Image (cartoon, rainbow, N blue to C red; front, side):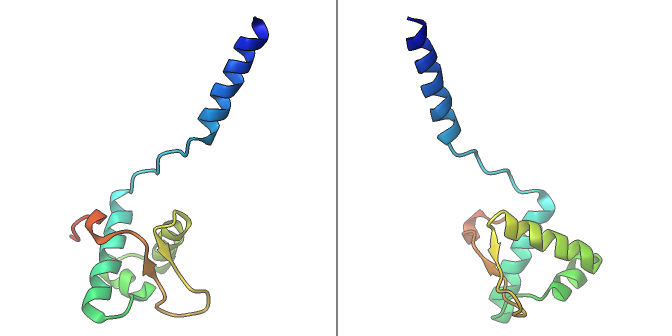
Amino acid sequence: MRSNSAKGESDYLAAAVSIPSAPRPLQELQGQYLAFIYAYTKLNRRPPAEADMQRYFGTAAPTVHRIVLELERRGLIRRSAGQARSIELLLAPELLPVLR
């Protein structure tokens, strides 16, 4: 009987491990960067450069780059290596916050 309960527990643990974790919610600043990328691309028909985001948000270049890398790591944007203005938004526009 003990082996059945142990088997049941291992099945439960295996099922729990295979359940994908819920995505972490966006931080407010990350959402604003995504909204900016979307709005800039719609208005200018090309994605923003990191310098455009730096000017808009009034932050330093390393800060912008760190946020872009985090958005890419989370699968919210895609970039092409070595290509300028290659940010592609991977999130549906209706899921974006309002740009402030």
